[in-house]
Image 1 (spheres, rainbow, N blue to C red):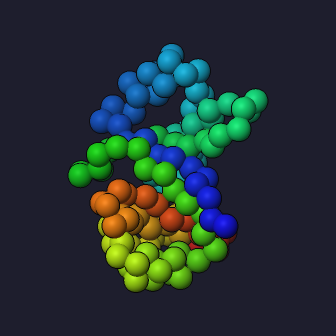
Image 2: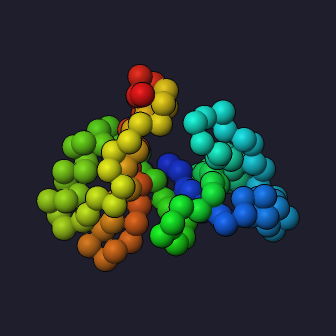
Length: 121
């Protein structure tokens, strides 16, 4: 069963946002070695939960986005649209990591779907 595996926090000022989450929740951030400025967030190791990341806010991005791991972005994008959802950002590669797309549900809530694929380019 696909589960939420990651969250993404958009920030107008990534340094300020990292400072906030570090000081309030004691989260740690590490710069990702990828094609965009992105910081991986470690939220802890003792309690159940998920980790996430933080990046510069893109135009129109409002709040945190949960990402759901799926076996196939193409298959789940089709299911989402068949059931009344929409594609907000079409499938794109995260080089050497996988494929991601952003969608909305029937209520307008935005979420991501992610397929692991080390061959993604």
